[in-house]
Length: 178
Image (tube, rainbow, N blue to C red; front, side):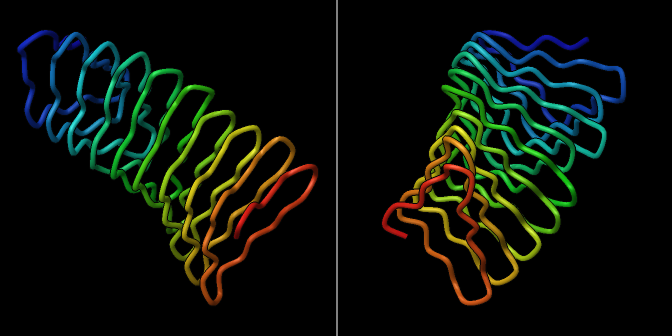
């Protein structure tokens, strides 16, 4: 277990399978590689981190995850903020109620599930998918080969569906000003 708190910084840490990293109370993790688990909360910051295949990250309660890549799984729950991350290579990001994601991308079989939270300015690249159910996706741009699926309780506002991109609206979902 590695715990990073007020004033502390861990740079280039490698958290292997079964290992855990806690970033909180003003601590910072920079360029970590996560194959185990990372928990970011309470004013903690994870910067330019890679969540590798098999790895998991959770961002909540005032935690910030900025930059980096999600190749494993990431959960963004109430109070968590994610900015500028790339969801790729079968990575999965799930945004729950109270979670906020902005200026991220999904491609190369990466998937974002918006299940009660809010996303802003997502870019869906070739073979990427955004699934919106119970949350709000604002200003998503879907490029050629990308897919946005809006289902029960989900709303996509001001989406831009480029040539070759697809938007599926079904099962009680709503697309507004697309």
